[in-house]
Image (cartoon, rainbow, N blue to C red; front, side):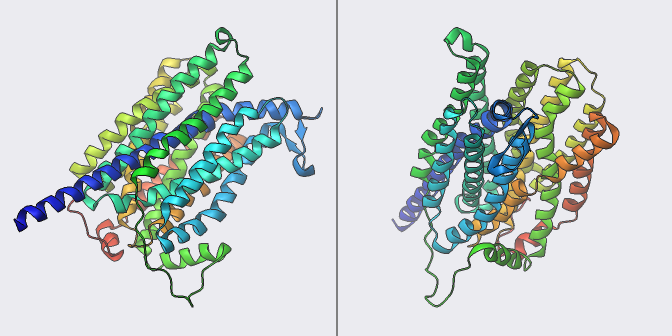
Length: 451
């Protein structure tokens, strides 16, 4: 009888964990449409056109009296959102770890971002300042929410399950991004038959991402549960402002191997993010491809990233996450080298390049997240994932800078795209030097049989 009771309790615990995991997947399903439809496809060109409407005869807009080229306004708004996120994430992460109440903070961040994205429907005429403000709020809120979301991973999945759970989360996100992008493309390309102007169609596409985000965020918020912690002693001060970021960094210095992994991730992820952001420029400016071709290529990346994330999750079970990530960095290098030789005006070969990117994109990101989760000291999940998220978003300016400088010096986008190989080569070398088993043990976590 006692054995049956123990077995029932164990089965209940497994069932509860699976329920949380399924709810966790749905946050990727909810928020990834923002990254795909809003940031990658529609907002940049549309906000630039709105800024153009407000520009003076020299092509400048003047937010807060500062002269800014209309074509640069979107990029500057993204940069400002990163700065805001870098300031806020350590504060929220430390608060989440200190109180154990991640879910209310996740809800606040998610619905702030969803509301700002939905309000992008109002971006008509010359309202570029409203567009910049909504972009800053939505992007910063997305970063904070993703930090909290990622920090749940070590709590809802034991070490042997994390690669698979993380990969499924990325797959859910890419599947949702693909589904909404297809619907948006139908609306955008056929806006006339729906009785809509092009501007109205774009604004509906933007707002629909916010509505989707808010609706499906309800699933993880219902299923995830907080792990409450003992309150801090009454006399122990909290750490405000930038001092919290400094405190997090000081604490991470006690785990140098975790920092070594984070450095490797910073380098190769910068390359990944730059390829994502600059591939469309390479396709349009160097290869002479049209907007419809580029959008189809983005959709192809999204669809294949689902298979790539799941497939690389299986490879990680057989060969370990570290080896699989290293293999993906080799694949990234080969893909960029092939991209250098792509002939102009040949959409088919650009689609092949997009397929290569899609197959390694989701898996390399999913496995990096799950591997890092093993290196986080227990009780500091949100705080450490704030540093991870800052590496993901806050430092992704080095690659675009190298891309821009290379183009400025050579006048060739081919040279600019091949320069990004350096991030994958250096990232490979840095990651290969990290003894992950020792790093996991030093962080105070159990070492999986295969990692």
